[in-house]
Image 1 (cartoon, rainbow, N blue to C red):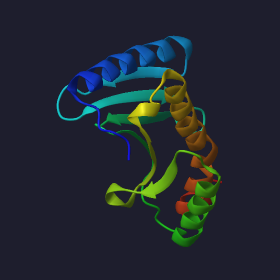
Image 2 (cartoon, rainbow, N blue to C red):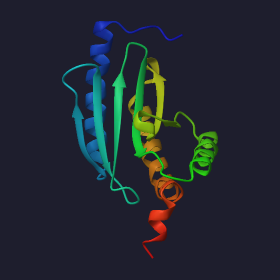
Image 3 (cartoon, one colour):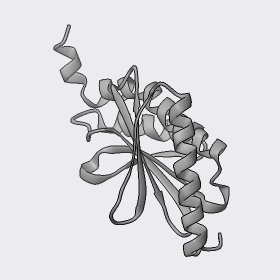
Amino acid sequence: MTDAYDGPSLAALETRIDEWLAELDAEHDHIVAIDRATDGPTRWYVRMRGDEKDFTAVWLTLGQRTLKYETYVMPAPEEGHAELYEQLLRRNDRLVGAHFSIGFEDAIFLRGEIPVTQVERAELDRVLGTLYSQVELSFRALLRIGFASRFATES
């Protein structure tokens, strides 16, 4: 088990995360907003412009032992449940450091976590890149399964 970070260690890591996110924002045009929650747990919100999905918003939540990350992929499917969940499980098999899951109101999320000892700038870049790319790669295909009848009437 990863050792828990104490107050001063967490505060130093928070400052470094703020700095790393600012550097990533300066380097990547598709990052359109970075905000930090001021109440409750230590959280950051990173909003990125996409092609397949207009925006992907990633929440980073810092705890004493882990940095958790998640992004909302799509609402609960209206149909094609078995096929959609099979797709998610197959995609999970290829993912490293993240997994698709069912969350609040049965919506589809992409989540993961890393120990605080592994939180580095390169790892933050990898996490954001993984979540962004997986949403971009899967969003349209998952929508077409979970909302097939809506797409059938668009032609």
